[in-house]
Length: 331
Ligand code: PMV
Image (cartoon, protein in one colour):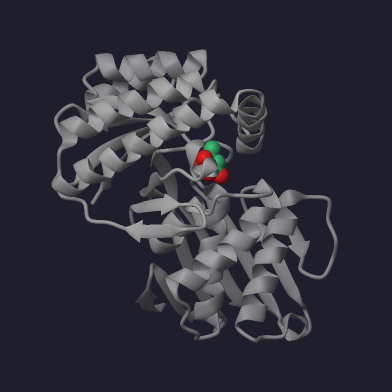
């Protein structure tokens, strides 16, 4: 194997078959979930220690394009119809990417494999990571350069299959692999981190569909727009203060802002007893702040460590029932 571009490798295996692999990170929303759907800013960061991987290899001539979802043990053909979100997402990603590269999908013979360490339906951007890894691997397999912005756009097209009207934050963070300050349809700033900080990302083990919590918040917003708009404004102010705190490396301020954001998320009705309990455990174990991340009602929470108490917080969360705890440095 040789070559290295955005975690991409391309070369020949022992049988002389050309093989290309690429990976992409998970992501977590640091601030601003839900309010971002209503035009307020949000901040999200990559979770570099959890990754999805795609491998593309030349298949036997005339064999068409096979898509192997390794974690599910399923194989799909590009040119057949399946009643499966996974199949559709993989097909859409491959078709759109080949079209973008001006390559006719009918004439290709490929075996495409995807796998992921990122738990699904936990707000960790697993769908975006798989799509991004796939776009990167395909582009490199055909020896083509593709910008992070184009990768992000192609990943967004796949996100639509899963989320209907996604905000665009997942594809942006995952494709750029940088912290992003994001306002839907308006801006997407990659910004400076004054001092690296460590986040513990804890999985409650409870799957939660973002589509459902987003729909619930919309229903409540429709019933009481004034109240919800005010709550979203509060989140927007927290996000702007957080961006400033991150830029100047004020980790204490960051922790307090996470707690404030969590208080509003509770008012929005997207927390859960399980999340509340684990957030409390993290704070008691020394986290500078903690909040749910993503859609809520399950999924993940994030806790801000200070570099000294990481393992104490992680152990406390695991003892309290977290399914998995990942430590990730944001810089
Ligand atoms: O659960 P996640 O990481 O997909 O985050 C969802 C964030 C929301 O603001 C709730 C929805 C969105 O599309 O931005």
